[in-house]
Length: 470
Image (cartoon, rainbow, N blue to C red; front, side, top):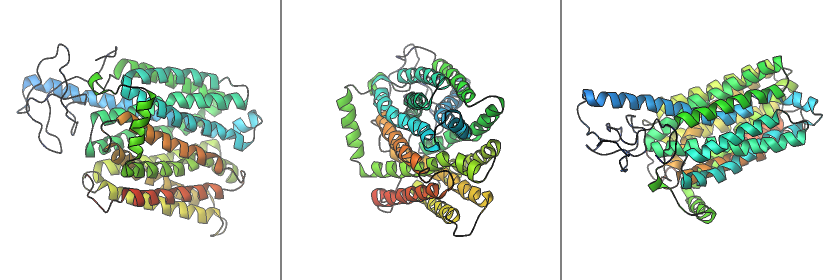
């Protein structure tokens, strides 16, 4: 491998029968995780010093050990990629219970403090746009390590920020650097998997990365018991440092030199223009981005809705937020384990978007007073349904879009992430436009975004016109 450092991903290994058909005896695997059901096989040059690939056939004592090692490797890669995709939500959600305290401590209005979320989201969006093409050109490992180091430094400065302006600036830098984890993790999945197995892997990844929204507010609430909001950033600095060490030691390169793209910014822009010209890719990207904006409207507004409007404590907010995240993860696992491969991904996606629209409509009716004054429980139930629907929407939009872009996984991943976080960054300040005493703006933003996602899916993807991969 061109990068230094140990890699858990062997260059070649005996292939197995996949869901889509039998592996060809003697075929060498590319940078996929061998021994995993559905791992993508592609011709690749033999690694230096490696022996010939084994043929498919009856298991032997000689092949049992490599296959067992490959399965352990697959789990290790899953955990590392899960950690990378979990870091940005961890950075956002651990900080959420501290928003009211930051407002008081720095003497800034709520709308200004919410810009710390917007800045981080904007950084995550723009950073992916840069890092994605970089990873197609130089490989996945080097840009990822650089981004992780910068993330740790920026987070440490956030913990020391004396005013809201400096905090906003370094939250932007934190997002720019943290983008490397999201975009490269998604590109690595595209390097390793294809088709139905890619959708399954995204659902598995959601099980790990989805733990971050569950535990992050809980950790944030407990940190606030012991210290102030700055302690949250101290904890994030330590987490980022540990994850950087894990990536350096255990995540190897998945994009060999012969599959990398040369050229500079001009070629990257031409590649992205070609991706955007694909109507179906753009449809999945737009639907996923608008659904993510509905999700982020909840993330940005819920600390004030739950704590300020309904008078709940930071710990109660953390528990409710964690429960909603459990719903998202659980539905994501139902999608990956039971639905993908049995039901068309487009049908599952359509159901998820429909539930999203219905949940947002219910929240708007409740917060607008159509049913009279409602308590926290009905609103929390509506938010739970909205969050759970994301378990059907997010993995399937990503998988369907990336299946169309095997030639430029990094750039496609960058576009998917950039559009999601940019739309989310626009939605974030809108939820506080009417102040802290009403949840109506949150529900309006959620309904507009959910309905827009459904329109983009139907108008651009047109799922009824051609059979989709199952």
